[in-house]
Amino acid sequence: MSATIERPCREAQQPGFTDLEKAVINRLQHGLPLVASPYLAVAEELGISEQALLDTLEKLLEERVFTRFGPMFNAGEMGGGLTLAAMRVAEWDFDRVASQVNAFEEVAHNYRREHELNMWFVLATETGEGIAEVIEQIEARTGYPVYNMPKEEEFHVRLHFSV
Image (cartoon, helix red, strand yellow):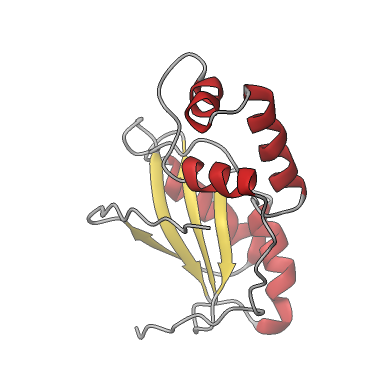
C-alpha cells in the first residue's frame, strides 16, 4: 500500500482572535488539570473568571473554531476495543456509505482520503470483541468490506498549534 499526502480542502483562513481567545486556545491544548473544578483552575491560571472561560469556549464552538471539545479516553486501556479501519468506496456511492458508517455510535474521525482506500475512521467499542461485531455490521449495511488495522504500537505526539 502506498501513502498519499492529504491536501487541504481549502485555504485556511486566519481568524482574528482576541487576546483572551488566544490565551484560552493556547492553554487548553495542554489539557485540563485533574481537579474537582478544572475550568476554574484554568481560569485562575489565565487570570479570568470561570464564566469568562466557559463563555469563550462556547463562542469558539459556536464559531466552529473548535469542532469538538471534550475528553479523550483510551478505550483499550479501559477494557474496550479501539482500531483504525478503512474502506474502498466507489466515488458515486461515497456520501451514502459515509452517512451509514457515521450513524454507528462507535465510529469517530471518519475522513475521506485521496487513496484507493478512500474512507478511514476510528472504531471504539466497549469490549475488544466489539470491534469485529461492528465491522461485520458496517459491512452488512454498506455492502463494502472494512479493512481492520489495529494498533501495533502507540506513539504520543504532543502537537500544539500556538495562536
